[in-house]
Image 1 (cartoon, rainbow, N blue to C red):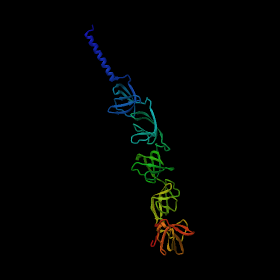
Image 2 (image 1 turned 90 degrees about the vertical axis):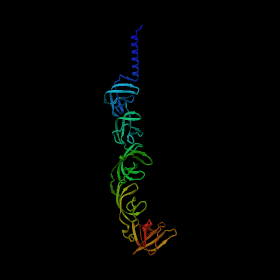
Image 3 (image 1 turned 120 degrees about the horizontal axis):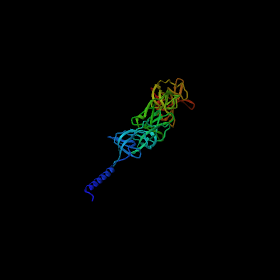
Image 4 (image 1 turned 120 degrees about the vertical axis):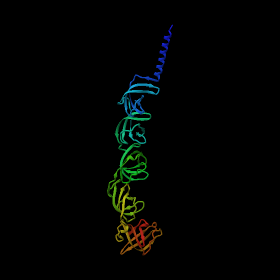
Length: 388
């Protein structure tokens, strides 16, 4: 018969074996004593490393985005693999990396535009809008970059991709209009950013092809003022440059018409006959006043009644010898001074009232009426009868 002492020894051995099995189930020491992985989380003396297939918790504070070789005791716990490190050092990745390409665009959280938005766990050490190829790992819905290769910047706009462009601001409103030397680009700028017409700027934004090429800019830092556009004489100034000249006003309204150019002048008020000196932004079909002044008011023009020349701007002053109003409302007045005379054409829309033997002063362009010298005026404001 088995002695009582032997039975007790067998029971003790059995208990030890059961306890060992239970311990191995909850905290098993494994033979592997090293792990190479990318740090994706850290804090409070604990970090998480991954190689893309396995994830290991390490009892140490490490730096996110670095690859480490950790040697130590590897344990299989109920919460996954854990390692109590003996040595830790930075290392090159020995595991396969994922590769993505696109343009770097940090905005409301770091991201790559490919043009799809890929959220990055860490910023890249490249310039905003730069094309890059990034090698790294996916973890928790974000991409952790390890190596980055720059591919430069786009030289032509592509829909949805960042683009950097330089040019002159030639218009403002719902969208700022930039002229880059060959085409107009509509800029949608952050609130409070309002570059002035005539300024040269460099701007980076995301390209959109709407009815016109557009650039969506989301940061004030993406708009850099480079200076003022070049000032050139009117006759040689190109679009995006500042034209300088001195001309007489031949017509008024929303724009001023000038006697020296077919381009209309916007952003300034003057009267027909005034001489204006200006620095104005040259646009496609108009000039935008930046600095304009009246140098010679029209009242200072000489009386040109004796200096008839078709198409020339003139001021005439004299006495009305006769007035004729036709059934359609159109009228003529003969204005004389000494031996000179000119017919004054009176459109019905002028609402002018002129009397025979009265004095009159008018500003307009010389023309002809049935081969006779005449003056055509554009507005009732350009005609004064009586004491002028």
